[in-house]
Length: 296
Image 1 (cartoon, rainbow, N blue to C red):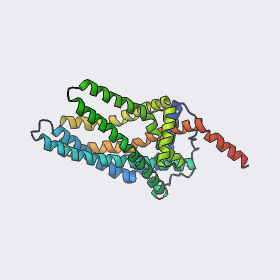
Image 2: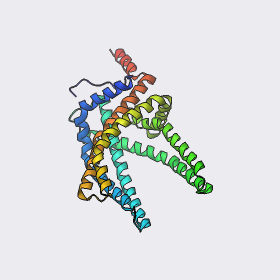
Image 3: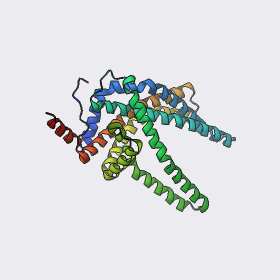
Image 4: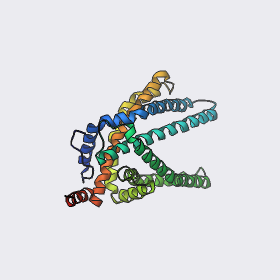
């Protein structure tokens, strides 16, 4: 790139991380958009199609006498939609991670394309997918606990069940900061899936407050922008009870395209959070300066 390179491994305040992420996106938006759009746009259109179908099926269940058949149809559509959403998420994260890795290495240019990134994209995507598989047994265990307790308590024990659900929500809030960091050791250090989980959880719990605040502010900003663009579809779907016709599909697909375009910005912002923590812990930039001095 012709612009001055932005240093990732630098201890920044949260405001400085916002500013650095904005500078990175302004500097590299063309290569980000170009490489994500290859597969991201078709996936986003497919995701929008399933969103409209799912919303239409869900709202169509209201007052439907064939309630069980309707819910079965909604479940199938929902599962297919969730599968597409997972693929969209994995693709965006993998491509953004590959671009971040190339940038830190100093090999990213405006001409960087799929042939330059594909090996890293598949490597990163495979490791993140494996991380998801590692977490599946824990999710199943939590769901099983809730189901078993609900069964033995009976439908009347709403207070106890409510407390259990509240505890699960608290547990989820507690693990959000470490969970949000597990992908970044893969991006920046080519760590394995398990090493990424270990380092992400170690740093996430140690700097829980800082990471949580970063996620909260970044998530609020991302959510505000995303729902501004998604608002026309939400309003249209509500007024038409999900039966929006071709315009409903167009608005749903547009909201999916917006997600694909802006979600990488949130990943970049969290990337600066991770590298700031690593710099504080390990002094990466200082060690690089020492190595350069010794090589003189």
